Image (tube, rainbow, N blue to C red; front, side, top):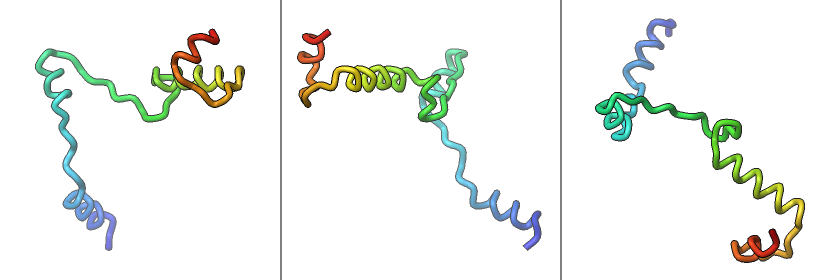
Length: 75
């Protein structure tokens, strides 16, 4: 197949762009949604929080009981 034939074949089978309700709602209120790349620790706050937890666990080496009450008592 030629390149132009392949491109036409791709265009016919390409999935339709996803439309999210949140995006439509935000457009109605003149806002835009910024999608962050997954697992980008510099931009994702949950990754930063998880890194702090991992650092704490490495530093204190708890005996296996990681309940919230135990962690609060040790700090």
